[in-house]
Amino acid sequence: MTVKSPFPEKYSRWRTVSFAAFAVMVALFLFVSSKAGIRALGVMMLIGAGVQIAARRIPYGLEGKEPSGYITGFPALLVSLLIGTIGIAMIVQPELMLALFEWADA
Image (cartoon, rainbow, N blue to C red; front, side):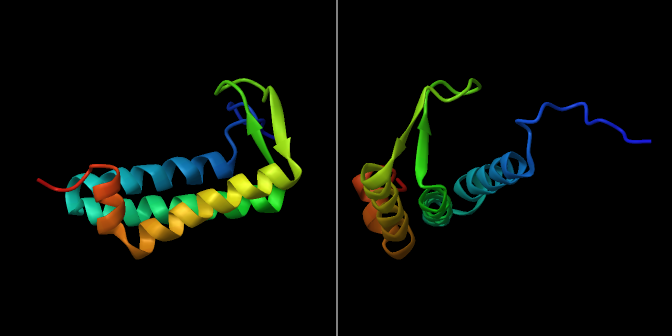
């Protein structure tokens, strides 16, 4: 006998892992330091950019609904590379990124 999941298909493993990573990032910001949180955000951005490059498209639209469309081709690659570059900068130079976003510890 097969048991059907009570959750809709949109609650996939990827969504669960993304939520867990977000929760860890918030915990780092709150309980460790802003520098640790910004580095975690950089790692998340780098992974997200890699996923977008692998998918070769970036969906856009309202959250919780089907995407209105997709950015594909060279523009999608440029946006993904920009996101990845910002992620790398957050990992390598967290102090600079904190100052840039004015999140520096008081």
